Structures are given as structure tokens and as C-alpha cells.
Image (tube, rainbow, N blue to C red; front, side):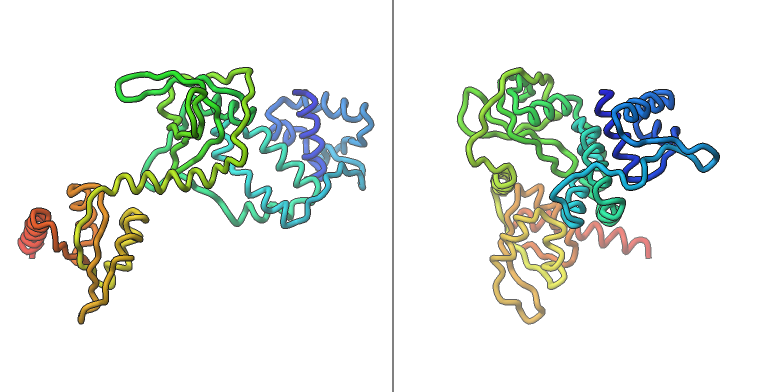
Length: 322
């Protein structure tokens, strides 16, 4: 721990030139006394670090002294810094190595590459919802990064199931964490919601990944497979030009794409008829209400009557307030 902290201190001084003991203590989350001991250890190791006295003083490195990283130009450093997403990395317990990597990049190229971080930010959770961190995420992350088997217990309905998993990777989707893993006693990777785990223990046994396994490609295929599995029914709808434009923003993207692909030629008013995949009539009811007067349901008849009653109640309510 002391060696890693001393390296972080050295990289901080290299990136920022001069820092007070209080600033270093705050960055490293230690006492100023510990900073003094670490500076002394660096000096004894031959690093030319010294203290300037006075109000504008602080610790600094001898002018011209630099540790070197190799192979990074400015653009590469920008991208590397963008990869240091503080929220998700902190959730996984990786904030300390992320800070160390960031300091190494800044010490090599100065503060300029940090401009990318000031211009781009990832806010993963969806709007209007809390995204609590799963309590076992750190343990799962340790197994993923260490490529060690994970003994996991998870909820499946009313039962609790225990499996030994090969944890291939973690995915953060709309604020929810998912583990992609292959059970030791089964073929093929599967997806587990981390917040449904009730136990997670990284084992000391390493595992061999499937050769050529691509986490991003696997997730994309699973996500589309899941979306398709939900779209078990369909309804026939007429859409105004504005309704067709809003469809991808108000409905599930896969359903919107499939619906618009079935659109025929616009009629005299510019409306098109589409076959819209839906999860159920109940879900279709809610989705079509969101489109308001920009959509007209043609079939099934029972759902059309229900929407007509909703439209009549809405018209009566607004009419009563005039």
C-alpha cells in the first residue's frame, strides 16, 4: 500500500508541479504526517522531491525530472481518460486503480488530455429512477477482473439456486448491472442480474475463457433476443406523419423499427398503416395512449373499443372545464 501511495504522490507532483501537504493528503486520503513520510521515502530512493517554504510553498519535483510512460499520444490519452468512468468504476471497487491510471496519463502528457473528460460524461441510469448499487457487485467484479471462478447464489422465483460460474464480464444497462457468466456444469454463457444475487464468493481457482468470446457482441445478441421474446402479439395502427416520427422515441426501439418497416404508401393525409409488435394488449393500450391523436388503432376490435372509451372520457373531462 505504501509503495502504491508513494507512486501516486510522485505522479500527482509530476502532473501538477507543486502541491501543498494538505492537498496531497486530501487526494491520497491520508494524513499530512503520512505525506511527509512518503516524501522522505521518495527522497531516500533518489527521487528529487523537495519542499518550498512560505505561503506559496509546497512539495515539488526538481525541474526537468519526469517518470516516463511510452506509446501514448494526446488522442490516445484522451480516449484512455474517457474510459475512466468514475461512477461505474467506483461501484465495482476499482476507483483506486482508475485514479492511478489517470495520474499516469496526466503525468506523461500534462493536464491537456483531461479536456476530453471535461467535454464528455456518461450518465448510465435512465431518467426518474434510482439505481442502487448491488451489494455484491464488488465481489463479482473481483472475480471478473481476476478471471477466477465465482460461487454464486441467486434468486430464481421462490427458490435460491447455487452455481459455480465462469464470470466472463459485467454489463451496465440503464443503471442495472448484469453478469455474463457460464455455469461450470452447463454449456454457453448466460445472463444474471447482479442485484438478484444473494451470495457471491470469488474462488482461488482460475478458469479458461471461451476462445473468441466477445462480450459486446454476446450482449447485443441477447438484448435483441430478449426484446423479441417479449413482442408476442401485434396490432394494426394508422400513424400520422408526427406519430411515425415519434414512434422510435416513445416505444421500444426494436418494436418501432419492425413496425415502420411494414409501413405502406402514405394516404392522402400522409398517414401510414403499420403492423406494430407488442408485448400484450395491455401494454399496447398504454403505448397507444402515449401517441394520443397521432395514432388510430384499427384492430383488434376489443382494444379499439377500449381506446375509444378512454378518448371519450378524456374529451368529456376537458369539455367540462371549458
